[in-house]
Image (cartoon, rainbow, N blue to C red; front, side, top):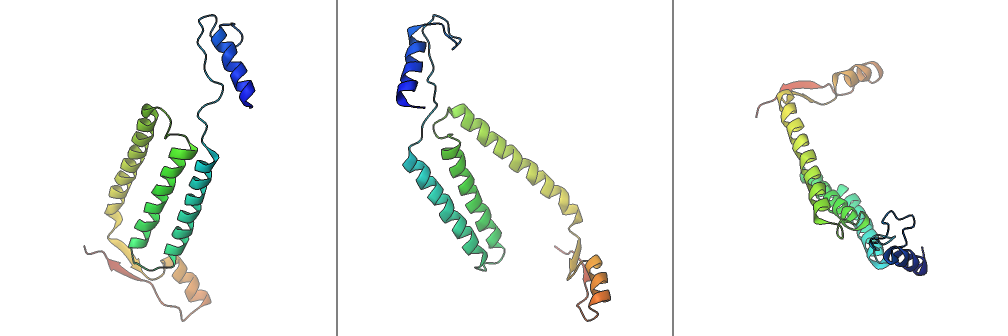
Length: 155
């Protein structure tokens, strides 16, 4: 939409010409376009997302033990925040919308925490090696393959 079209649509709404805007003659008008993000901001955000994706892939090849998953999740949270703030325009939106977005994320995290707590009851059933179904196929097709052994969980 061009600037002239935007200006004409807003001028007609402010002039109180009834029209199809549903405002009648009370003189209130709304712009036809929401917040416009500068192209430089969008390009910078896209480049940041690409760099963070490259870092995520690079971290996969660096062995820091169980901390790898924490690094990957941390980078994913940063990327999701960038998308929400700049591509979803939450940075320029009403604070209530940001509050609702954050509240929804917190409720999802809470639900996941309850699911993780629910699976703790199965923690004492751990297998070292291959699962039993895989072992059966390996015994049939690769007789010298290592055997899975059941070990009870001891915290």
